[in-house]
Structure formats: C-alpha cells, structure tokens
Image: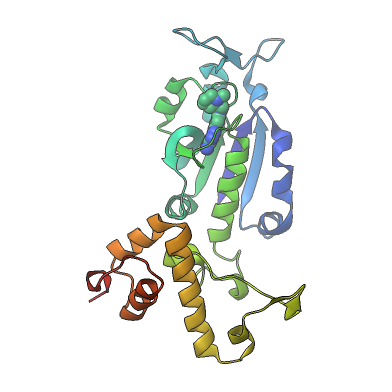
Amino acid sequence: MKIDIVTIFPEYFGPLELSLIGRARQAGLLEIDVHDLRTWTHDVHRTVDDTPYGGGPGMVMRPEPWGEALDALASAGTHVVVPTPAGRLFTQELAHELAAEQHLIFACGRYEGIDQRVLDHTEATEVSIGDYVLFGGEVAVLVIVEALTRLLPGVLGNADSLLDESHAHGLLEAPLYTKPADWRGHEVPEILRSGDHSKIERWRRDRALLRTAERRPDLLAALIRRQALDKRDVAVLSGAGFQVSDQDVAK
Ligand code: JD8
C-alpha cells in the first residue's frame, strides 16, 4: 500500500518511523511519503490560508496549493481522505475499507479547515476519528494510518492475529493479568491459574459479555440485532441483571 500525507507540519509524522509501522515500512509492506503543503505555494510568504467567504472567525485553507499538491501526487486509483469533525466516523469497518485501497492521499487541514471545493473536486472521503475537537487533521491521520497498517497482509504475526480480537467479535476484551499472582493484595482470578482451558475460555467470554453490557450497551445492542448471542450468553447476561430475552438468542 502507498500512502501520501500532505500537511503544513511534516514533523508530526516522526512516529511513523517507530515500532510496527516503521518495521512494516522497512519490510516494504507499506510506503509512506510526507509532503509539506507549502511546496505548492508560489508567493514569498508561502501562504496557505485566507479569510472565509461569508465572514466568521479564523482562516480557511486556500484551494490552489491543495489542487496542485493533489494533482502532483494522484495516480490512477488514488483515494483522497480528509480528516474533519464532519466526516464519516472512523471505525474498524472503515479501516478495512481503506486498507483495501492501493493508494491513499491524506490531506491534513489546519485553521478552520480546507476550502470545500477541494474535497468536492477530488471526491474525497471525509473521516472523523471521534466526537471531540482537534486543532487539525495530523493526529487523526496518525490514528488512521496505525489502524490500517495492522490490517495489511504480513504485518501481524500469529501471536496478535486479527481473528481473535475484540472488535472482530463486537465485544470488549476480558481483563488481562500477568505475574505476580498476588500484587499488593490484588489476586489474579483463580480460574486463570487453574490450567483448565475450556473453563478459562468460558470465563473470558463471560467477562467480555458483562463488560460490554456494562460499558458499551451500544455494542451489545448491535450483537443482539445480529443474533450473535447464544443461549449461554443470554443466561449469563440475564443472571447479572441485564435485560435480555429468549428472543435475543440466535436460532
Ligand atoms: C481536521 C481544522 C480544527 C475544526 C473549528 C478549529 C478529525 N475528530 C476530529 N476532531 N477534530 C478533527 C479535525 C479538526 C480540524 C481539522 C480534523 C482541520 N480543524 C477546526 C472545525 C471547527 N476547528 C477531527 N478527523
């Protein structure tokens, strides 16, 4: 996969050299190039912003440098992605969609954002990483690139395989423990030390179900809608006082 990132702050992307993303790049599984938007300005001050039509606070990114940048970087099957609080919510589902692309160009806005005509002209996908307000698109791009990198073939080993993970099931993960068995008087649950693997699997499923019901009722509702709970799941939830019925059991 090829990724181009266009920004007025190329220094934000130093972390993409580190750890597993850095290793994926070195292994040739992922090519990332970071570009300074000001490369595509022509005035002495390398201006990228101007006042908003219609008035209002702050400044808007001018379309001309963006147009030149995106023309210079575009290839045949390019997909432009623009982080904005008004975009489609970034989820694991969207991560899979984007990870299937050959070439992505990320356009990082600053100030109040980018002139809408750039997004319209390039048929960009507008994406939001969540309902809170950032100063610009750079951190959102770091989040999205990390989520995509994990999905690229050859990046994950068996130890951290995609099959087993919480968002694949639509459940939160059960809690994790390592040694020592007693830490400051807090003990690791007995069952995890029992060596009984079928009991341990059931215990983890129960913890995951109860945690999800407690913390993310939206995820539990989605599982019920998809008829993804079995009789035992429903019994565990109902035994813990959560409102579930026989209707919610998969047929
Ligand atoms: C891009 C400019 C700041 C946004 C006025 C000043 C994503 N989940 C998210 N929260 N915030 C962003 C985001 C914020 C951005 C830009 C992304 C470019 N800003 C603007 C509009 C309101 N402030 C984001 N993805």
